[in-house]
Length: 191
Length: 191
Image 1 (cartoon, each protein chain N blue to C red):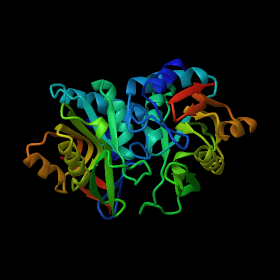
Image 2: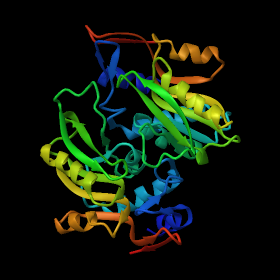
Image 3: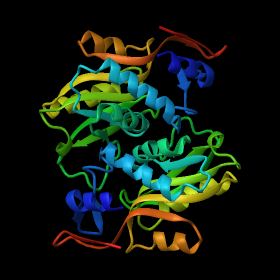
Image 4: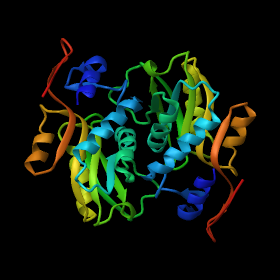
């Protein structure tokens, strides 16, 4: 998606350790007009998927998913990371290793909000090694529901998450795929 | 706001300890059509406030704020709770005591995304004792910006947060204010 690639080139910051900071428009400050364009594009790409629910994970996925959901006219459920006093056995759960925060999270979704009839589109801001997406897919399987697709804003094409998902037959639509990036001179090459 | 009050009556669950569970439509599963109506109502209420930025806090505020921002045509910034490896002194920070999770969070906002020119509307899902809102207002003060209003979905009118904010002259617009609720018979009385 050209609009997103241009924005990444303009405002993204490449840091050492394969870190791309896009917090000026994607995951700290949020450009809602851009999110609307992303939502329209996912709707175009997944128009025939029969999506009944969008699933994302807190916190960075929530804004993107909420705005995108307007084009699908379905509810959004966000998986929760923290241990809450409300945790009481009425949830699907899994563990996800976070690259950014270098720790393992328990991730939960209430059993009330995913059912076997659901055709679920997963939406998230980044796809790198695929840990978060695999965790969400596990929760969807636990619910007996179906993952009909994965919509990603930015995929790090040089990490294996996207490749492994596509090899499983999962339909992954990443709006920008980074082939390589260089922290020294700040350059980014898209696929 | 009648639509929200009706939804709370229909789908809200009153639990012991002054807990109101609205996770079927507000803060776990999210009804985006409802969020749009809430956004329109805040825009009506804060039309003259000259809002340049919306500030919320992860995770439950993000979806509401992102959808509402479409009516203000301004960026949203969400304050982050977790300690990140990206934390590096370039942030405004404060501590917020969480009622739900019974712990104290460090809350940060990058200095890049709030400036002295900003007229900030705070949006959040709940207002009870006001800890989260006070923390966000402290961050706005640190930035030299102005809090022009606070938009809340559900205020627990029997806790003191809203009263204390209004006594300071802060414009608080809560779309539903609960005067009292009873876990035994599940009743809710709105202000």
